[in-house]
Structure formats: structure tokens, C-alpha cells
Image 1: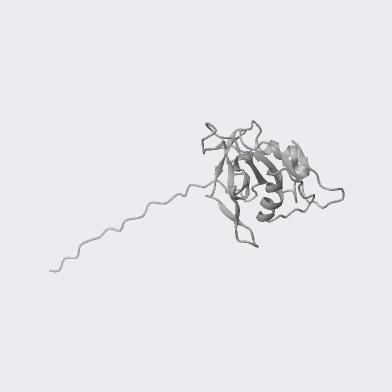
Image 2: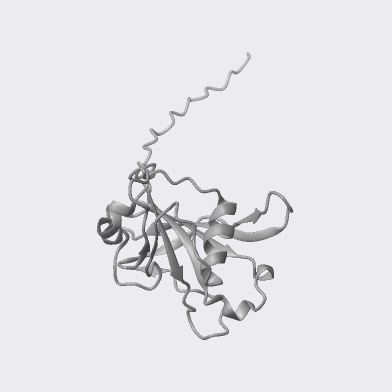
Length: 188
């Protein structure tokens, strides 16, 4: 996997805003312009790959920020044909399952929509990794591109371990309710 490397002596802190990820990184990448040198963004496949999230993490952990975030440029792959709207969401043994419908990202200065952020979680029932990985996918609004077909389906993804993984739900055992016996009162 190729990457944009950190300058020597640079800190492993990288807290870009959603707007910066779209305008400074993704838009520049799509248009073939130089990227800012303040962060490492890898290139690799996160959709339709044989590798599992934990394998990708292990291979690239030295590029993580605060040990919790990796950033990737990746391409979306259509599930059926070039006209299909459905995208491949498989990864290794499981798949990325959407957790929301997406959040519009707006430019602060112009209040113009510049892109979307969607959240996905890794799912594979019966494994210890089910729900253990999160992916935030950033895509650019086609209105920012002179020719949307030149987009090459690039997206920027923030990839992280899910440290707040939900625990297995325990079955609640409910004791049967006792039924009071009602004795009718008869007045004589």
C-alpha cells in the first residue's frame, strides 16, 4: 500500500476536520494536485478485498494516529455493472454494514455542500471481531468536479478499532408472575 508520508520529526497527531478531509485531501487527490504534508494517508483497498480489518490494521499500525485512526484513499467498486448504484461492501470474512444514511459536510465559509460522511461497522457473526471495526467514508459532492466521471470512485476513509464495541446481549430471565387467588366474598 502506498502512502503520503509524514515529514521527519512530525507528530503523530492528526485531527483534521471533515471539511479538511474533503477539501484539502480528497479533492486534491481526485484532481491530481499535491496533498498537504501534515498527515499520512495510505492508499489501499478496503472494499472487496480478501484481507480482514485486523490484518490491514496490523500491517499499517505504524501510520496510525494516537493508535486509533488510519486514513486511506480507496476506490469504490460497483456490485453489478458500471451503471449500478450498489457498491461492494465486503472485506475479508465479513462486510461493512451501514450505520447511518450519511451526514452532509458543508464548507464553513460558503455553507455549500462539499461532500458526505457515512459510518460503517464490520460485521461477521460468531467472531470476536464482529462490531470491532469502524469505517467513516468521505465522498466528494459531484458539484465540485468539472467532470464527475473523472472522479474514479475515490473516497477517503478513516479506519479505526471500535473500543466501545457492544457486548453480547444477555438473555434476561424473567420469573413467572405469581397469580393471586381471588376468593369471592359472599354476603349472607
